[in-house]
Length: 233
Image (tube, rainbow, N blue to C red; front, side, top):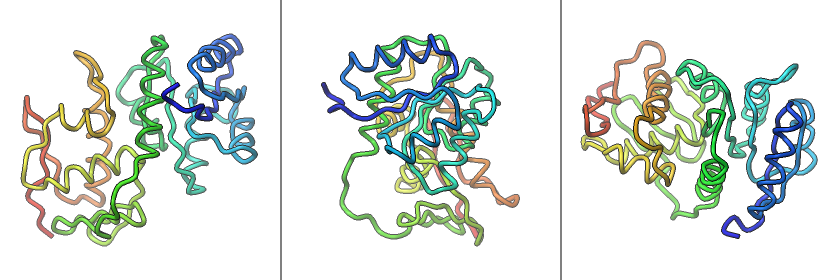
């Protein structure tokens, strides 16, 4: 299998959904561990760190948001695919802000779930030459070693997806980066017609780059893509 037997932790309080996902992902060649709630998920991560998590958002007790926050607070950068029945932009933003790298709205096709998991795994294992320690644009800097953003002296943590998106835009500062190029470089698959997934990620990243009321640097070029410009201290 293309995934090389990658270890997945599937977390869902619905036993039927959990077991069905486990069976299906095992057939795709993954080594799957199941957890029924957030507490069990955190324990499983400590005992046997997975290559990626498939994490349900809405669970009693410690929910998916709390799990993601706990992992990121512990400097755990394991890729997280958040599953949610809520398709409102605000709900997706909550998941991304908590530390999820991608999200998938229920109900979904198994082929899409597998594609998204494989894309997260590819990004996590890609090896590139050592980059320069900082990318800068005015008072906005991306610390490539610490994987943090600094704006006007204030540091902000970024998810893996947010970091890669901001890095791509900063490396092309002053130029328009098309939607197609962003989706191909960051996700490796097309979201499909009518999807606003990219817009959700950009909206979340904008809020972080505008920390403390700093002026906007990520601009939309309608119908084309996005650009970083006007990088003034």
